[in-house]
Length: 101
Image 1 (cartoon, rainbow, N blue to C red):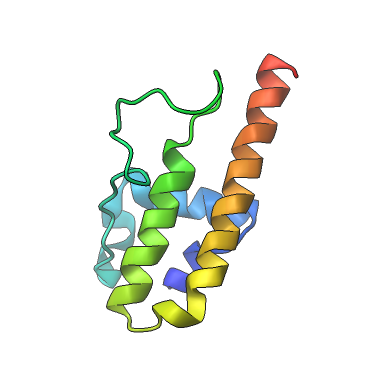
Image 2: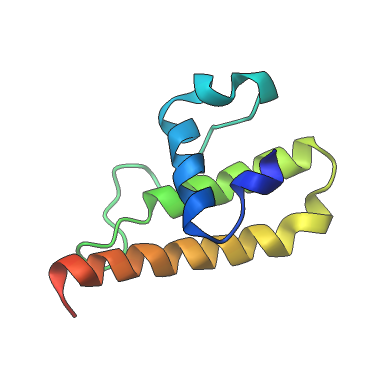
C-alpha cells in the first residue's frame, strides 16, 4: 500500500492526504505517519511566501519511513524522491495560481 500512496500524481497525493489527516483510514496497514517535515521544525517559515512545504515534506518522510520498515527502501528511494519533486511542483503551481507569479 505504501507504493500506492507514494505515486507522483494528484490521486495519490489526495489519498495520502486523507490518511495523513485521519490515520485511522489506513490503520490496517500500521503505517508510520510521523514526520519532522524534512528536518525543519513545523513552525519554521521556509520557502517563498505562499509556498507551504509541510505536506510534500511529510509525504517524503512517510515514504522513507515506511519503505524502510518494509525492507524495500533501496528499491523505491528514487521514486519517493521523484514524488517529492512532483509534490513540490504541485504546491508551487497551487501558490502561483492563488498569488500570481
